[in-house]
Amino acid sequence: MHFITQLQTEHATLYNWVLFPLTIFCGRLIDVSLATLRSVLASKGHKNIVPVIAFFEVLLWLIVISQILKNLNNVMSYIAFAGGYSAGTYLGLLLEEKLALGKQVIRIITNKSDELLLEAFRTHNIGFTEIDAQGSRGPVKLIFTIVERKETAKIIGMITLFSPDSFYSIEDVKRATDVSYGTIKKQNKNLLDIVTKWR
View 1 (cartoon, helix red, strand yellow):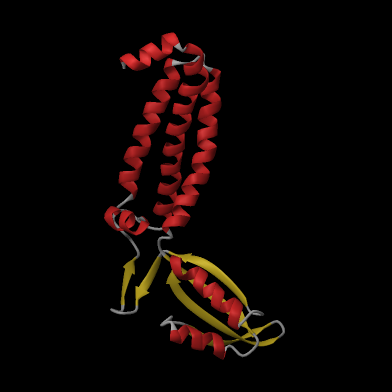
View 2 (view 1 turned 120 degrees about the horizontal axis):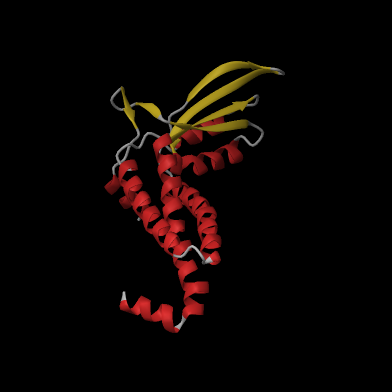
């Protein structure tokens, strides 16, 4: 505290225009990143980690707001506050994408032979369901597969390689039947699981 007080008095310009706004920006960056990540995880049903994130999110918000209220005449702090909010939203989405939690369903529609693609799925132990369907231009094959989000890029690569003319769509899955046990399980992870996976 003595160091900060000394800095405020001896280097007031540096503190008011650089150091203090930078502190506000970083605090808001982390706070909003946590808020964005919390919202995404809550929508995916990860109930165990959401309250922990919410605690630190609100704690950081209170710290930042208290400093803003003590320095209402510092215009740069307002800009830093808004900038931290914007950057934090983007960073939160990047973190969620990096964690790649949950499962996704991939739907593939093709009007050509899909045997090479299905054989690739079998080789990599990827479960799928294939059904005959009718499109606007005639008969088509409809293929469903549910995979971990981290495996989605690999599946897209297979589709591009073995069935480049097919149409596919991807959607997040909140709940799915566990094929191994035949029971419905939520795809939730606790804090330790998420941190370990991220590392």
